[in-house]
Image (cartoon, rainbow, N blue to C red; front, side, top):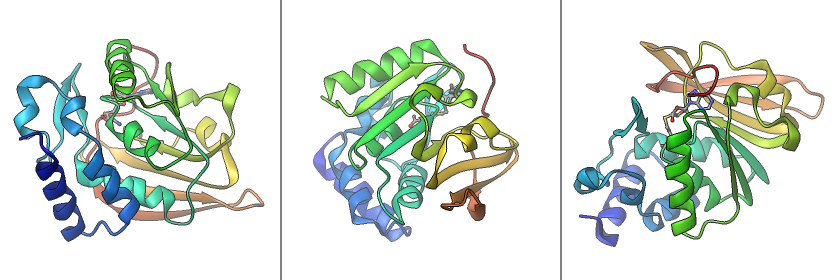
Length: 211
Ligand code: SAH
């Protein structure tokens, strides 16, 4: 149930469902997703579903983790990526398997504590994490080559866009709880931002403050 075979099968399914980037599929094959969820749910770890992780939050569906990662690296692998919404830590760990340095921010301390333990146990070292309101970004280490939000607000916080480097890419779900779309913003060398919509998605809300 938590075997290599289960991961291989999940990666094959994601490929069938349109994930093309071999670097992304390879990380999905390698990374033990069951490590990021409660033991009681281990038998469901390699289904293509979101699952509860406590505190009313979820680990995202593998397909959406793969799609967002693919969208982020499509035009080149960013050197330093900031993730907002660590949650279980799975998306951050997927990123850490591909990009040189990952920064991740979570507002619920207990979730962050558990995610940090998982990163340690898996020996992931190119990842820094912080307990804070991610709407504020990570100003002391900004700007970033890539930013990814894994919770949906009705708009992308300006502070985050300000912390994106010229040439950088930001991927985020945007909209109301009932109607969200995945967007990709690219900031050119002059600071001009272009926006693409990548399809309908469903995420937990981006909240303010720390929990
Ligand atoms: N990337 C996660 C998805 C978790 S769900 C994973 O792979 O498991 C989204 C997470 O965003 C939740 O844990 C929620 O607490 C967090 N979140 C929501 N608003 C936030 C904010 N303003 N700052 C930081 N984290 C936030």
